[in-house]
Image 1 (cartoon, rainbow, N blue to C red):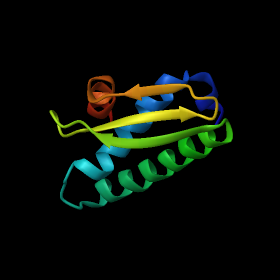
Image 2: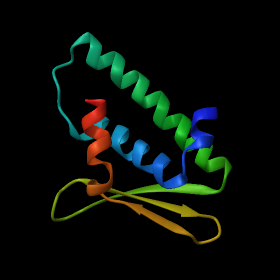
Image 3: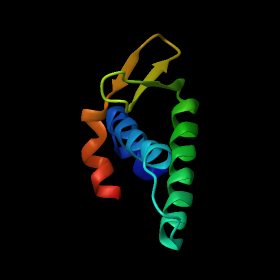
Image 4: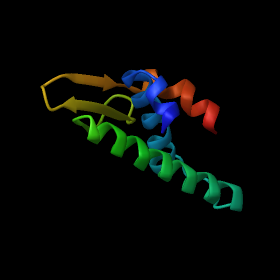
Length: 97
């Protein structure tokens, strides 16, 4: 949790988007290390959602019609909006794989 506090909101969303996308878009053979990685990713995503929710942010997921990849939209209770596209989180996804 302390590590999340050091990252900017945009960085947290990029990290969340990469992990969440890996869980639901990439189809890999269910090898033991893949299953374990996915469990850790689910925990990290839940932790990020909780952290942002406590600060008044809600994460919505939409899909880009051109690329087919998810677009993540974070909305604050004060109306602020941050959008994270595939071009923002593709490098992070490559690191995790």
